Length: 139
Image 1 (cartoon, rainbow, N blue to C red):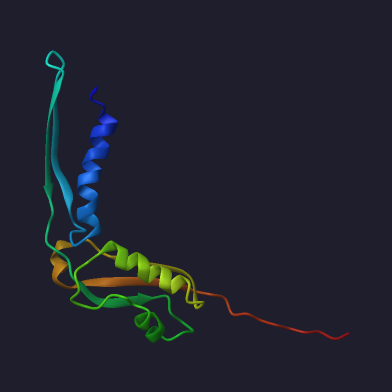
Image 2: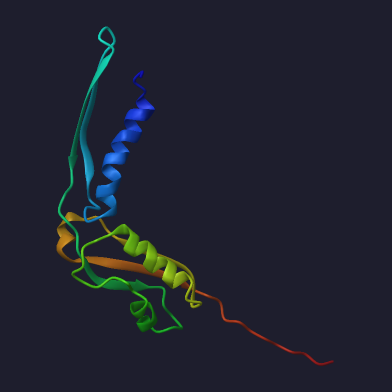
């Protein structure tokens, strides 16, 4: 098969993506090299990835809660402090918040700062649903 840069880029992402999704959200590509020998119709590919430290959940940090108590947000959490990081946990948590009926939008994330890996704060930003108002007039 001929060497294609797009295929090489996709292969690098395919190696990096599983690390980013589980335990290593600070993983990064450190070096990559593709040496192509057209005469031999061969490619020598080298990839170096730094996984960084394994991440574990810390305490939640909530913003955007006004009318509803933060306890609603905390009680919907599928993650507990000390549990190993998984991107799917955050996506599930975000979905639970958005389908709860209290919030029209939610963002749940962990900053990939290696200094916080032992107890990475879970940053939760919510936008509350507007109040439903009902008014009746008589004329």
